[in-house]
Image (cartoon, helix red, strand yellow):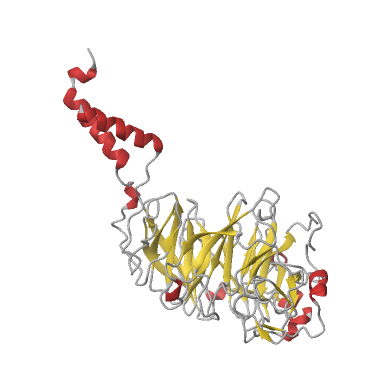
Length: 486
């Protein structure tokens, strides 16, 4: 005698429960503990991604990272250094449990890093890089009497962010990027200007509290001729050092305005942190020969109606602006070209690799100098086993968008503007939006708000993207429904 004949009601109830579990939204698609919604047309997540607004009301959140206890650390421009204790219910169902201002300093504006052991935190102003002792188990206001100045003499009136990258492959090596004084900063033709550069410092050599800081010009040069390399990253597998560069505005060539689609933004490779030479296709390591062209040479993005195009293609360097005595040939022979080139004015501000080095995610802050806005998104770039992008150097579609503005015509006034990126211990990608004072979490294949809705605003009100049917569960649901109808 079968179970179905002895316990028909019990069987049907069990199958009904299984069917309900199979075809209902995942629990983490609902998040009663976090009902925050954006006040503008909500961003659109790509298929397979979901996101949720977690924190709002910040002044100007820029760099972000996580400490060893899962606390979210944020450089909030105009406020200082802020810690968020999070309530995590899985997926994107995360909310703020407590907010603590660790350092009140309106001059802290972007850069942030954490030592490998998690016991030292670093942050930067336009002039200085500071460090403080830090205890992730009891985060509270940091004592400025214990603050140390590690690098100094970086003040300039132009680009003021000083991005910090502390190497994981070589603990103690701190890379600091510094942008130009102006749109076309002619003094950056000379490496001793100290601007439009990335330099590294061995901070482990700074022993006692009384050891003086490095002057920025004391650092090893990883790259110069970089107009504003705001985003820097280390490939966690190969130890490659990468940056994303914001190129010039209002550029002219042969007396013609080309600024709408040129020059492109850049993904640049600076060598391996261990000093190895790689395949020799580009100059690697530190030294004054590592010049990427600015302010004389720029990367071509669009070839359409480009003056005196010749044999140039996307990714090639061309002479323009102040390059009176330069040629396209010398730009391509004497300077290092980008590995990839992106749409002009998209403004890449951060880059973060996955743990296996197979992808790098880039935040594109968005344009201000273009009639039709571009950017306002987060995208990924695929990398191969050798630690190089899979796309060719002349590609115009090397990125895959994972979060975009629903209507670029609303930007910048009614759009999120991504800045800092950070991975948490659960493999979720977080980002800050400085213009809206917000922090978001994104998850691949997890519950949350995604698709076309996002969360609130004019983007459709936001559908919970928690309905994720696996093939086996779909089949189970079909079988169950069939049995219940018998």
